[in-house]
Image 1 (spheres, rainbow, N blue to C red):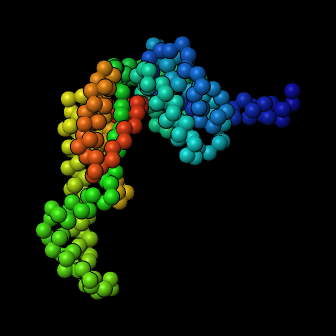
Image 2 (cartoon, rainbow, N blue to C red):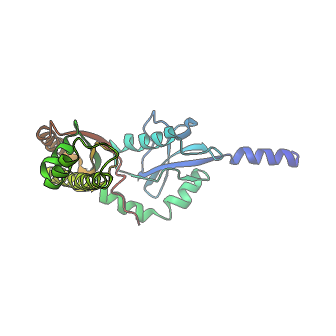
Image 3 (cartoon, rainbow, N blue to C red):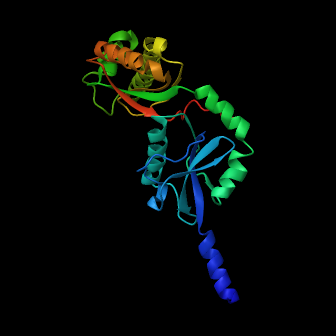
Length: 258
């Protein structure tokens, strides 16, 4: 074989890496029909020391970051998490090959992964997003804050290009009041589901009508209790906040960062 042929063969052999989705306790095989990132191969497991990593082949020079890549990454993890505990890896983790995953990831971090899996045993993540209905939050802040109501009334009928400073002040007051309302509503949701959850994490929201986004770690045996508590709150908020439950999910928000 010529030197040029050797070089071409070497390139062909190294053009794929192992994309890593997450870590779980040792499994014989990955669940079937999982959508691999890049769509180039099936998702499979590589195991070492009582642990398994979910991986698939990925062309090394292929750019990552397309929406379908992130969606495939999450679908693999969420599908597996529905049945067993899995530690999600950050999106975009690629090693040289399956051997490197075993030698460089599973083996040196075995105790760390095993401890993290033990902490999350028997749990699942859910997310709850809320949207204010028909500007309910704006009506509420006007009704609840005399300063906002008074300034709003003063500006009624005044031309848009007039009273600039007053309009800026009104915008600031409404903005601050909406932020406070979002915090209060998220805290109310956490309290309403507290008896059926283990941990929670409140996320910032930015959309004008977005009310809240909270992640919950739930014991698998208490999922029905969590859903019942959420349903009860949804009934209380029927005309002001629409709640949407998302999950089950991998525990993205409850894995130790160290």
